[in-house]
Length: 357
Ligand SMILES: C[S@@+](CC[C@H](N)C(=O)[O-])C[C@H]1O[C@@H](n2cnc3c(N)ncnc32)[C@H](O)[C@@H]1O
Image (cartoon, rainbow, N blue to C red):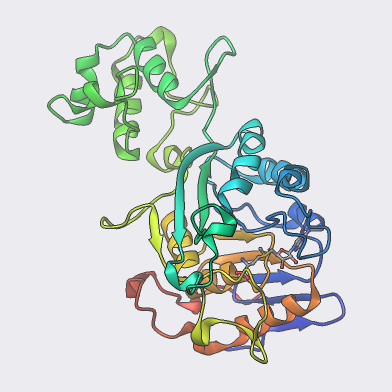
């Protein structure tokens, strides 16, 4: 890294190598931030631990509402939202996310293991199994298309309706894609067995329909009514997701400990510090190098550290001064950026990818 980070104590921001952290209320910054490819939300749990955090889990939807509204305004169909919370907190907020157009993809369970209760739980008094989990729930935004009569369609409906409009047979789709029967069977089927056409296949179908389809209805596969879509444009209509095989939605990972834990003397600085390994996992799966990650409720900004380790940009905010300061120290600590054992070398940060701020 060639230059000193830009840290301004007065107005409270840190900016270096594509990473920006604001010491202020995130609500003031959504409008200025670049479009997010991933939003990592780790905000109120209903424990009253930071300023304005409700004391009760049932009150957290009202706390999240303005934030969810802002995320929905700035997200695109490429954006993934990761919503961290307790199981109950997520249950409370899920209807609100749905109402604002977020589609549930999967619930991941962070299992902190027996070490989290360390033999301390009085199950007879609690009258339940000890809780050692949190959830990290994945949401996306479905793309919407408009039919010729102004009707709203989802992606599956649009692909089928554009192909049918061209007057070509379903078998012709196999010819367009150069396959025996996969195109017809996968991309033009109604119901649950439908597959998203990969970008090169959709481009091939669009080209074929515009070349061989009924001249009356042209252009086909043109979301703007004029220009047929190509592979690159098509890939922007879906959230990014790339994950190696061999991983499930149960994430076995102890509470943050050892040198990763940020401490104040012997006490943890922030009780909610998330494991870097898990933050890297979600960011790596849903962004590419250079993409922008939002971390609206930074705490110690574990998401920003992970983003920097992976060569992603990040926009983060933290309202409490001492947390913000610790986050900046973490970002400045170059030892964080040594070789990582859980991420392939070519996925790790090449901090030179960023222009100077
Ligand atoms: C659950 S903690 C995040 C912990 C973080 N993921 C980590 O690994 O350190 C939530 C943080 O959001 C901060 N916060 C709450 N409301 C905020 C707001 N409106 N703007 C910025 N930060 C906020 C709180 O002070 C708290 O530190």
